[in-house]
Length: 71
Length: 463
Image 1 (cartoon, rainbow over the protein chains, first blue to last red):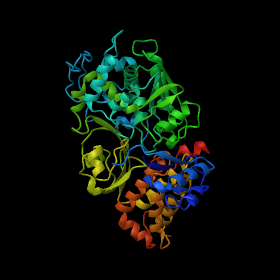
Image 2: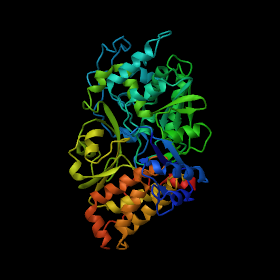
Image 3: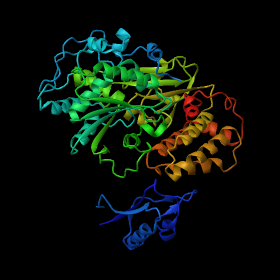
Image 4: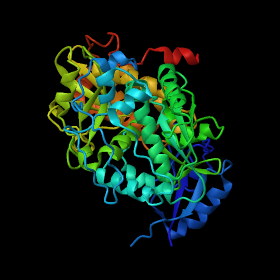
């Protein structure tokens, strides 16, 4: 089972913790808002992604199970 | 700008005007066939063109009664859904989504249902829904009642923006005329949400109906139906419902007599910009873009057309031979959307107009998502510098990066629309952009905008 990270753009207020914790998957745009690519999270980063989600002050950074399983 | 006044339609000559109205209503047979086929494809505005009257009696004289279900006719919703599917009708609010599929999604929801008529029309360059409500309000209400019956809805809510008073007054009169008659089996309420660009986005509309601020919602899974209170909501554009009223009366084959196989029926387009006769025109899907544009009589040589509205795309004059269908126009980089066409002639600057659209759209952000709040003004800044010949050497590259930064980064598609509009401008007006980037002056950059609604009452009324 793979996981994906998403950002709720309404909740996000550009604290940037996600990019600090997970630079492999999150970059910031010029205004400080996170950019994620929507692809599956590599297994070795899933735990870190969960931590980034937990640390987000706005609960805007989310880790979800991938809806479509990679074949 | 195109207006919702009846003058706007009075100048049009709908391609699909029905000369003789069928006198009997035969819809409702089990196989969805009908005995009466009008000599021409049915037209949305035919009743208006024939009588110049908007009342129920004139409407019924022209079209006959809407084929609503009889008492205890349990199989009617299924038959209606079948007829709708056979017609191939797609939504006319912008997304061109199959109407039968949308109906089915909400029909399968549990519990109560509400039908929402979306006549918000926040797009400044669009006037078709205002024209429909002003000229043929009963056709829209027929469609709403039919869809509500097919859905098993307990109520109909007609949403007209609070700055569209004439259209609201017309539909309120029509609702009052029908109340207590057999033509209003499901009660109708007319509501006036705020007239902002994004207020008509369906999740924003439903948010307002739920007592919220009327801002778009973040919906990672759009298959989940929207809800008003505990009632599942089906939101249909006003024009889509008017088409449904014709499909239900005259049948799918009649609807398909206009348009092409992949894009059946007629569609309303709002033409504006560099034209002598701006207004709303009913066209057969698949008509070439150039033939549609010519009906409003361009004031000069057409260099480009903004298709699909302020969140749409510019297409060059070379695309005027393309058939007007979502697929064909889409393949040429254009957008059918809600039927907006803004004509740019040789005596206007595409970059300057694009800057104005971007600035307007930045002001119409709901203010919820950072990339939209900060990105759209930044994109507009860059475009204005480009248009006025004060570009720095890195401007075009920075603008392209910023456009990529806003694309797909909001809860709704507002920033995506700006991104595609600006991208298309940089492609269609590439030579102008390059000249402006080298600070070469533009003869038309300071000219008044040809775009409708850019400096209008909408902004002032909110100040």
